[in-house]
Length: 171
Image (tube, rainbow, N blue to C red; front, side, top):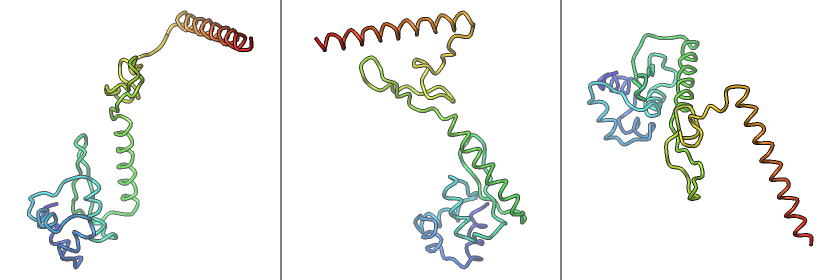
């Protein structure tokens, strides 16, 4: 959508620049800036507010996203059915959740210095490569058995030490 189309839609809705700015939560100068632009693209939240402020029931406005950029475009299209609108909303929600799952977070694991790890996690993981983000664990049956036996020994030693500590505290 161009800035001129936005101005025409705003006038058709009977809104001034100040009224549109107030409904969308931006300044009047921002609306004026948008109306001077050759194309209107930006963040999804603002464009949704523009579309809702102009005419919530207007099915001629469509938000379309450009994959991998995080930007969307407000387009003026032919009328579409409510079912198509629901499909578009579901696809946008799915895209957002998929993006959130693939986002790299700060690892946050406790380091040896008792501080939080500040490395970024591996894609789709919670931890960095140093704290288990790349770990696949044992894959063979022998490796799994070896890990299980080591865990049994470790817990048995922990239980023995706990009992000895409790006995020492009683005497």
